[in-house]
Image (cartoon, rainbow, N blue to C red; front, side, top):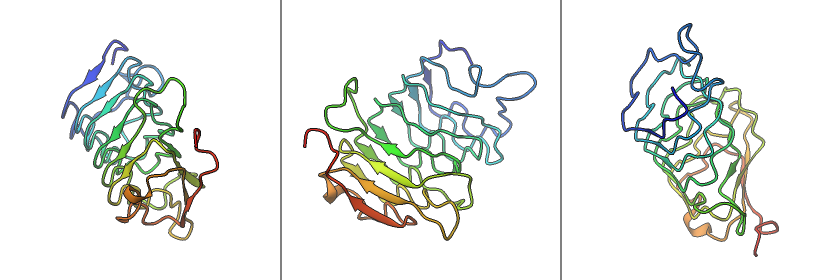
Length: 203
């Protein structure tokens, strides 16, 4: 896929079970498992249900990405290894990354006053990072949610931090918005939730 592509529309590759970026004919997205460098939008179900068998190989999301639709990467399988979100993507809608068992993002949102961030993450939707595979290869000790995040919806991180059924992660919330975060089983399957106001920037 050319680096000049700026938008992947709704349902563009939805249910494309035979999509393979590492096939003998196509190296991968870009050259190393990444989406096009100028991409700004992945529409709803853009890659949804691409393959639970791991045919979608994806290491990063481009810094240019500003919009991610509902179920954009839903059930894309074990070869999605994203560990960082673009800083100017304000909303992660419902089921966006659910069913990507090796995704390992640990920082969500930004501190007040962080430079270069015009539209920081403020909303994390229902089941958006939920994972059903607790035996995945994620290595997550803590999940940090920063002050720009105002709302975390129901079951958003269900099973996300667990590496095995007995080993669970902790969530550290750097936020003043506790009334909108974590009270609808948003973090079910993690060990603990801690509020920390010592490093919130501007507080």
